[in-house]
Length: 201
Image (tube, rainbow, N blue to C red; front, side, top):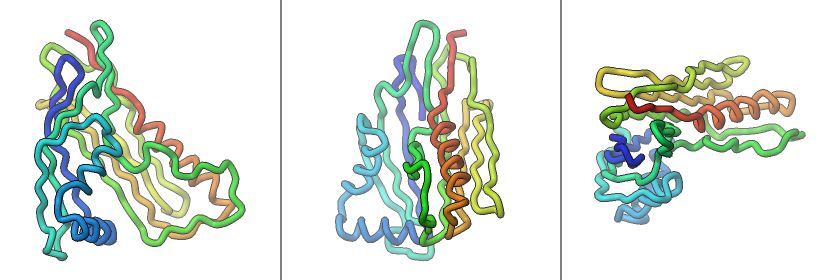
């Protein structure tokens, strides 16, 4: 994505699914041979997105990840305030809200399969801006390697890059493990909501 001085983003969004998630996405596409399913996925996270084109790779090849590529523009994604610009760089993700709403739970939490979600953002900054503040990196592991969360945003020669990795390995969490799991997702939601701050040079 490229960020302009008005806070708009322009570029492309790529989704790649494999394993069980690819099965579910292929079933959706088979039921809807157009592009409305993937467009709706984008609009759930980015309601103001203007999607120009969507293309798919490996829709029929089950040995490879299903990929969808959308060219799009995202208006008003950054807040401009004087010399400063604020942007939450984790634009898309399944865990920007904690899925575990109850403070306490008397039943176990069960997942059908292990899963992982990886978010990568390559961001070109607007001309004349420099980084004022980056979100702090995080590396958290649940007890017994039940899951992990890694988050890092770095400045590179071509701009900024965010990499976020969320992984759940453990399928069954007992009620006494619920507090740790809920805190884990609280941390993820908070971190994915943190803002990048840019300043006019």
